[in-house]
View 1 (cartoon, rainbow, N blue to C red):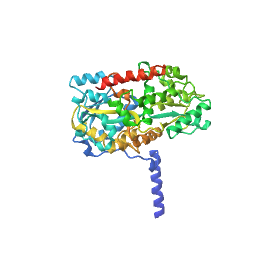
View 2: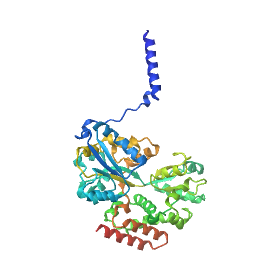
View 3: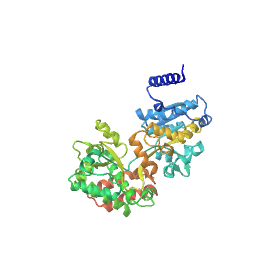
View 4: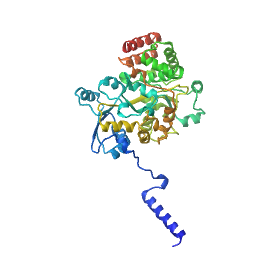
Length: 429
């Protein structure tokens, strides 16, 4: 057989094998692997108990992320899913906590005496920016591994509607303000700003005001409100409320004016820019809004019919970061902590598309178009601030919502802020 015929035959066989596998050489993805050293002494059969609030697709994505650790080390996962924090409290009080729990930052404070320090378990601080680690550090101990994040400092809109009306996505706050005025001049309502959420009515307003604070004052100012070094009735807060109120109270700027803002359910507000015809041009809402739009309008296409842009001019981002905490120090726990804080762990989290990973090594490994776009802002931000209301204890969140509702009902702004500031001071003294 000639060399040319042998070459042709070989190529033909390779193509047949690839066809049978359903792809081409460039489409064949290697399985994710990690090194044996990352097992940290864990032996096959070692059990690892986990408690978290996720279920369904979220739980599937977590399993996808952890599979390389299971495959390499032979660790046996013992997961439990619940939305009931009382279960976690009961386990901790009984002295039988799970090895690790994926919960909230406030539990780091609550359980600080029972928790293991992340750096002592093998976590690499270099994988995280300081503004992710600071809220996870309690009384000088790094107790929470930043695991999963979402960003709130974004505005959702319809590219198709913008194109049809000749609007461009703004890149500065002044451009956003000019765009809003142009929309009003054109007879279009710029904003959908519904607050109604039962006992939590007001939280969407607090998110919007915090993003305005990030534009006007910056992340250090927001963190000052959280730690109490800046009182909530400071002039900078009043300025943000006034900026918000111009849009949230006037029916020319938002659907239904002040009463529409107060009475429209927050989910209903998300839908209004994407109805046919649109009732508003934009809605400021967290990353979850994209999924809500897709559920409500399954025929709409991301990037064409709905999309988002980062609040222009914001000097940092607002968002939530969920921590993992460890109650026990075992080789299996050390393996999990080391893996999730490693380059391999960050890349695996991003590839699974389980929101955003605070691990810097997630960058460049997202495949979902919306997550790729969020990640660009996320990894390049100069500051990341948690929700003010969620971060101050003692009922401050409710006090903040009350101040916003009173303000929209034409209550005296100075009085509303002073009342919230009193709650802030009491909670943080």
